[in-house]
Amino acid sequence: MRRLAFRTLLAPCLALLLAVFAAAPASQAHVRKPAKPPEYAGYLFAYFTGEGTADGEQIRYALSRGNDALHWRELNGGRPVLTSTIGEKGLRDPFVIRSPEGDRFYMIATDLRMYQGSSGTWDEVQRHGSKSIMVWESTDLVHWTDQRLVRVSPDNAGNTWAPEAYWDDSLDAYVVFWASKLYADDDPDHTGSTYNRMLYATTKDFRTFSEPKVWNDPGYSVIDSTVVEHDGTYYRYTKDERDPSSGSPCSKFITGEKSASLTDTSYDLVADCIGRGAMDRGEGPTVFKSNTEEKWYLFIDEYGGRGYLPFETTDLASGTWTPSSDYRLPASPRHGTVIPVTRAEYQRLLAAY
Image (tube, rainbow, N blue to C red; front, side, top):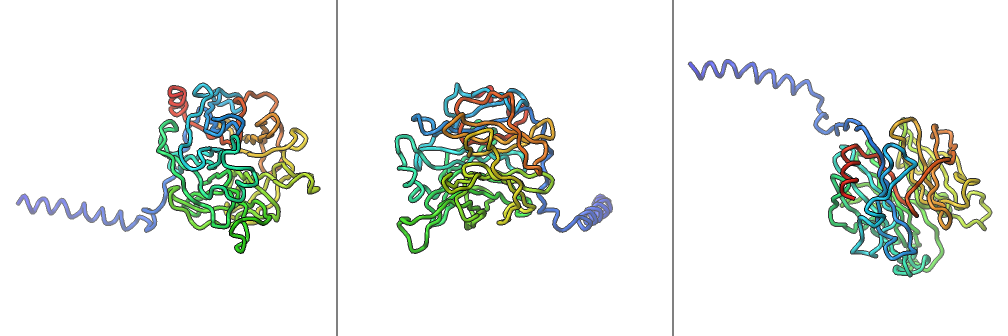
């Protein structure tokens, strides 16, 4: 009798479960559930300080004063929080990205050390420089895995500079992009003349990467791209690396473009010469949205001059960036990245450093 009663109760339960599974969309198991947007309490700035000192090409941290994106405190007494022990033993252009699930961070950086010519002259490192990027992972922004060197550039590349990444929902992967000089196939010793182009590859884990492709090649040298997405449009900011003697009024300034597709090879121009009039020249842009209002910040490095200068806009599509009037950035920051952090992350970073 007990077996019969159990079967009598089990049958409708099984039927109900089968009905639920049948009604569910077939692709539901493969959908990446979007993380609930967290409440942010401030920003983390990861950067290096330059090749003028022995430890300047290592990674430093600064934390904003709450949600004030223009006033900062240096962490760890201004000393590096990550140093390189492999590859070229130098870290430049650090970039940090939060995973779409929100539970993991990846940091990537240029594998290069220019202090006292450690990696060679600027010409040499663009002919025979590293073809790899440096990678770390973390769940808390404080404790990082051992660094690993991952090759991303093709054989004909002479350098791999300023890598950044952006998650692409349509590809279900990270798009990682960087600048490389590409040499002719019949020039294996990289002795010829060429220029920097922006390349990209995709990855899901920052371990295995797709074959690199050219992303931005306007016919002249471009480096240091950074991207932000808003309302389905990707806005890309890139340094025009042409020599001022080329006659271009926008040489050594930032170009703004947009596209509906991250990996599009023909972005539409939004603005060029960004920064001109407010600075002598600019590179290493980093762009991020305000945590508290409909505003974006674009930090541009006036290299050889005052260092990073902040600009802001309330309309990315306008291409108009206004210099910020009141700010206090960390001492001597060079090409880095700013990301928002939660209150728990903010407090953890303060406690650790």
